[in-house]
Length: 111
Image (cartoon, rainbow, N blue to C red; front, top):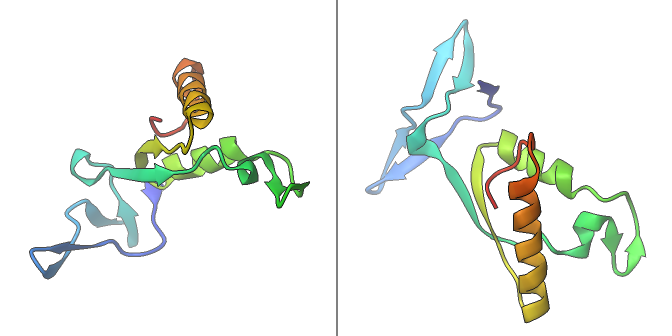
């Protein structure tokens, strides 16, 4: 179970309700994984050069795509739709998705 830093609030039919996956154990608030509360990122530009450490065509830090995907998984993101704006980017996105599927032991959301 992952510890959660902030409370989760759902808006259902215009009314604010607490998520049924929240409970208190040992005086600490925790977030329980549940099939009803899966998150999907529907527009992730995972091919952006910033994930390779590049900003405005200059290297600023080591590639961190792996770390970003691990953090997304830890935050409860179960799936990511990888976006592309051209035929070549579509090929690159497909290659990234295949890499994620073929790499055993990664704690990433499904791409």
